[in-house]
Length: 495
Image 1 (cartoon, rainbow, N blue to C red):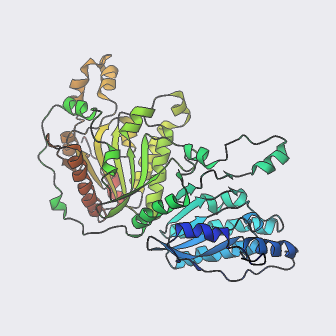
Image 2: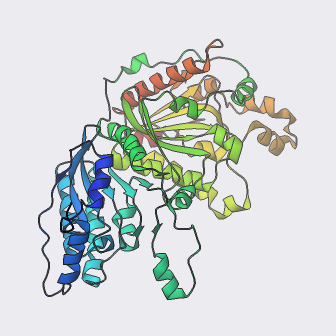
Image 3: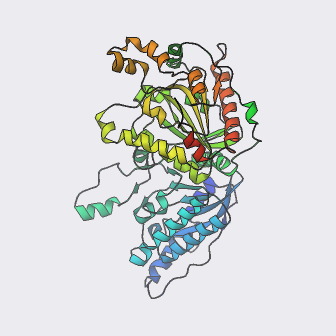
């Protein structure tokens, strides 16, 4: 390469690591500048020579694992990836084309934000880009973001923060106000490490921190889930019947579901064809007692929201942040037009000052309201323990299933015994009296089906069988998803 030959743009070098080989095709026309507003021709010329790009954003299409996608790429070496009016016009055209062609959209920003040479006219164009992304998602199309180093300012505050899944480059600086600007404005350095991708992952602002190769490995199953929502015909409802209710004491079910060796949500997801974990609310909260993921179960794609019994045992019960994560899952299911699967397995919500200040009760109510009206099929599995509001929050469904020994109650039976008898010792009797076990839930109409738990079934057989049942139920629910009917399920209980 001679000194006069421009380098290959770094953005395209990055794309080469994520897209299938030789699959990128540019959508870009030469940028058009308003001569009266851009008196910085020398800066632009130097940026083109330095970067090998004609602007701070490159757009086009390619494939990832054979899946056709549209791509937005920032070129940071072109004026720090800043967004001018010509840059914004290019991005806007690409988003709208992706929507028109119904392509998943991958965004790879690396930018200092608005181009200072153009000021407010460039700044306000962020609104148009954000609105185009919102329209893309409203069309039921995926928008996946990977934040590269650095991503700051107006880019992070618009199209960089609207992803249904958001990942980041290791060590990437990700923050609204860059540290150099902060120090100049406030006369002190910004706290070290706060704007680093790894720190933000711990707080649920990004879902994962990934090198390009690992990002590609994540995108391939994600695109498979998002672009092929269902395979196979729905079974007849008559084929999905429950066995006769068992008559065992409810307390036996309570003790069995508390066995640390009982399979939980993690073991169920291990049997899925593909799983793409999401972390936290995407808005600065993370509570690992609740798990959120995109998954494909026996040919059916879905959004999974469920209690993680192992994480709760290690880190504590479900809190307000976990329920806000659940509502993120409900929103994603609606945006992506995927069925929602919720899995209930909780000893109850956390009781603490922080939980009260974080609006725990309000979050339970908002989850119930959101899940009752989300405009996609909903299947709920009562997998094990189902205590209190943390269980109620994930219960409304078109099809509700319960494992043979699962149970549902306003409080753990010991808590109900303390309230009524001032001692936990009468919990076994109260468990029967309150009609908490699966057989009673079926009789009352709380659940539609009981899944047997053979005594000689090992954990792998158990989870494989349950995943197959869930896939069939998701297919069936696709023809039943009428939020009004979901609302009516609980109106006449106990009458």
